Image (cartoon, rainbow, N blue to C red; front, side, top):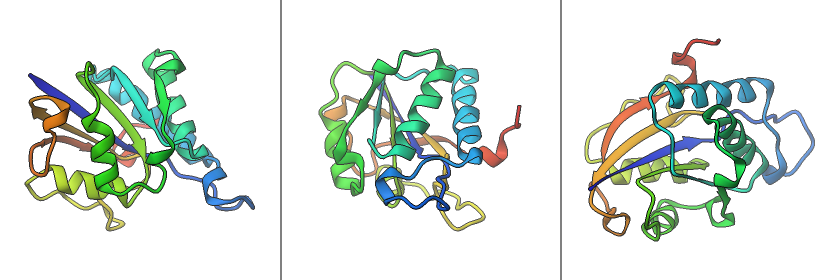
Amino acid sequence: MTHELLLLRHAKSDWSVDMDDFSRPLKKRGRRAAKQMGRWLVKQQLIPDIILSSPATRALATAQRVCKQLGMDESAIICDPRIYEADAQTLLALLKVRRDERRVLLVGHNPGLEDLLLKLTPNSIPLAANGKYLPTAALAHLVFVGDWIGLAEGSAKLVTLIRPDSLPEH
């Protein structure tokens, strides 16, 4: 059976506020980008069965905005504190325990998400202009054959890597 993994880096956060890293909110641009990515997922008919999100303010706000665009109840979002500051191995371990979901959306942070993307996909991935694979609000759509427990290095195929600056604003 084919499974799908959607990796979404949180949208642009606001560095102008005097808050700790965990509590930083989204910038206006970030709120708009999260909404755009949610609309793109709807157009592509990529509605996840579940959303796993870091509880950091900027990641959870991204997940909530995407969820709203998808017409999903926010109860579909599972906040897992292990996602915040997670490395690729930790993220992979969190995914391997999934059972019934065919499509999972994981909302998190770099460098963990980028490292996971590079670990799972055997082929080279194009860098964004800023030198990142997953700039803020970028989404990677991966597919793999087998169960979540079998998700391993090089086992997934990158279908699409979409960045908000490539999407229409409206």
